Length: 80
Image 1 (cartoon, rainbow, N blue to C red):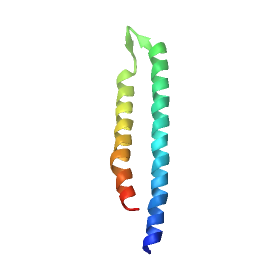
Image 2 (cartoon, rainbow, N blue to C red):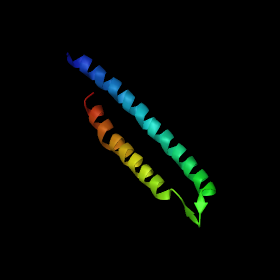
Image 3 (spheres, rainbow, N blue to C red):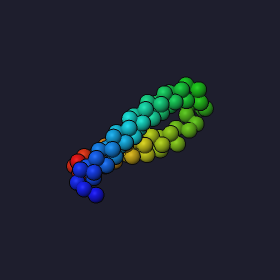
Image 4 (cartoon, rainbow, N blue to C red):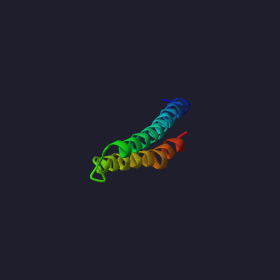
C-alpha cells in the first residue's frame, strides 16, 4: 500500500477509536446513574448488596478507557 492509503486507514481507525472513547464516557455516566439508583434501592443492613461487584466493573472500564486515551489513541495519532 502506498503511504497515503496507509494514513487514510489510520485516520479511519482513529475516528473509530474516538467513537469508542465516547461510548466509554456514555457507559461511565450510565454506570453512575445505575449506581445511584442501586444505592437508593438495594441497601440491606446498611450495606449495598452489590457494591464490590460494581466497583470492580467501574475500575475495569476506567482502566480500559485510560489505556485507550493515554496509549492507543496517541500511538495511532503519531502514525498519521
